[in-house]
Structure formats: C-alpha cells, structure tokens
Amino acid sequence: MSDKDYLKDISEIKNLMNKSSRFISLSGLSGVLAGIYALIGAAIAYWLVMTYSNGILYIFHGWVFWACMAVLMMIAIMSAVTGIILTTKKAKKTGDKMWDNSSKRLLLNFLIPLAVGGIYCLIILSQGTYGQTGGLMLIFYGLALVSASKYSIGDIQYLGYIQIILGLIASYYPGYGFWLWAIGFGLMHIIYGTWMHFKYDTN
Image (tube, rainbow, N blue to C red; front, side, top):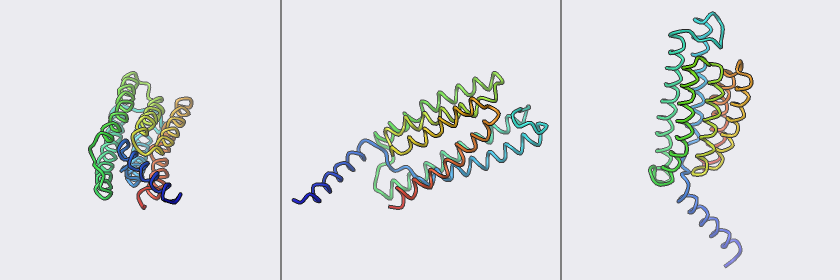
C-alpha cells in the first residue's frame, strides 16, 4: 500500500470520526439570510426610533420600545426557521441525520449561554439600562457560538470571537451599540455565511 493510500485511509477515518462527534450539516446560506434579516430589522428599528423618539437613537419611549422588541423577536424567529429548513435540506442531501447525539449536544451548548444572555438582557431592560443591551447580546451570542463550535464546524468559533469583541467594544462605547449590533448580527453573518457556503456547501 502506497503512502497516498495510507493518507486517504487516514483522511476517511478522520471524516468518520468528525461525523460521529460533530454536527457538520449547518448551512452557510442560512447565515447569509440571518444577516439580511438583521439588517432589515435594524433599518426598521432605526426608522421607528428616529421618527418617534425625537431623533434620539439611544432613547426608547413607550410603544416604540416594544415595537423594536417585536422586530427583534421576528428576526430571531425567521433566522431560526430559515436555519432549520436549510440545515435539514443539507442534511438530507449529504445523508446525515438531523437529530442525533451530536446535534443534541450542539443545540444544548448553544442554547445555554444564549438563554442566560437573554434572561440577563431582560433584567437589564427592566432596569432601564438600554445602552448595554446591544453589547450584551453580541457577547452572549458569541459565547454561544464558541461553546457550540466544539460539536459542529469548528470555524464558527471565529465568528463567535468576532461577536464577543464587537460586544465588548459596544459595552465600552454604548452610544455605538446599535451600529455594532448591526455589524455583528447583520454584516458579519453575511460575510461569514458566504464564506462558509463556498467552503462547505458547494463541495
């Protein structure tokens, strides 16, 4: 057996081990669409605040605040539904199982930091500290991505690191929290999703 055959066997064994321990059917296109949803939602929220809150971006009043929260929830729901649909489609195409031990571990490690962050953001909002919420969302979402990367495509950890860095900057400069949120959840998802799509989905 030649060295090339040994390398091929080793590569196949490695791929089988990755498939058994990691959920690798995540769709890059779902990340692109999630980024587009986030940018559209950010534009709607910006228009609401600038139109009905006396042009002061960082102050929310009454129904404007709840309207922005509704937009945020719609973004989250649409992103989740899109991700499930496209990931299921990719898993069927590649012959992988959508719901197995690796996907369960992925979901658990993703949702725990995300749920804790969501609860903490609600506490902050109930105290009227609106300026920190954008940074906190980015930080906890980044932590969720880093945590989940152990059970999925390892490259998503880098998106997580970027989100954490943007969140820390937003926490230090809360006046720019909105724009950094749009960059993190919008632009970075589009860039990273596009890269992931051409790296993994087109092969």
